[in-house]
Image (cartoon, rainbow, N blue to C red):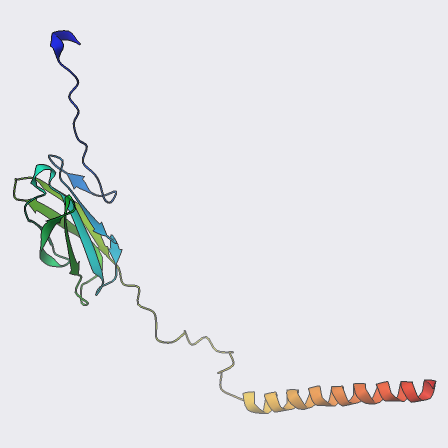
Length: 159
């Protein structure tokens, strides 16, 4: 290469979620990235050359949490409060070396209704369901008796 210079390789920022953004090779991931209120999430961050010092992550979804160094990254966990309203919340990473990054955490409400809709006509519908069940059962028994009786008559008449 001209001037004896080799190629300069730049380290690309890792992105934990499609909405993650990074500056100066910093990144942050939230796992899982979509949760219900009351769920614990794990945070994993990379502050480039600052992974040996604590960093912090802050969000309206859970407040502020300290991320501690370990295994070449910064990690921490936090629980989204049980009364947190559904929405998309930004999670901001602040590194001690001045690097910053952000991603999103989505809070959803997946609560299930306590009972099904009252559409009527089902097995628990009011009205004459008791007498109808008894009459239907009696009709089935009567058909069975007639079938057995007719079968016996054929055997004795043929022999």
